[in-house]
Image (cartoon, rainbow, N blue to C red; front, top):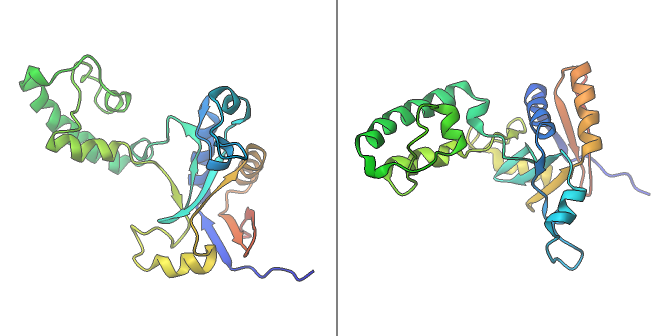
Length: 212
């Protein structure tokens, strides 16, 4: 049988991968991939069925870039990791809070958890998604923390697409890095904090850590 030739390697920063893994391990609910969430006839599985099969894991995704993310719910938000991003959003929240508190008609019974975490004193006001400020702030607060493969982040490399298609192929996908594999990756990276590598082939991929 002819051995497949690798189409390239995807390189991920080990510390960020460990952040994703620890987030997934800290959750009690999980988001399924399409294959996990549906039966063979493509009918959706019930919540009970999903609860019995879903475990902490990672999703390996290729769409607008190639990246990994935690399957844990609630999702791992970018502001929970990126201090600069959090500072920027918090400043916007503080400005908007003053506007809200100046107009009691904008008050509501509760505030989203992510907003309380950023600005705890806002426990009697809420951002309105249909206001100008809310449209700018709320989507930013919902940004997921994902870990892009080196060079395949469209936000930092405008020429990423050709390399991504050469390595990953033309079709989008979501692959499951299951619980057992994820725990093995965690063990390797904690022992040797090197880059995490996914080696791509035409019909499969393998995982490991770099030698440097």
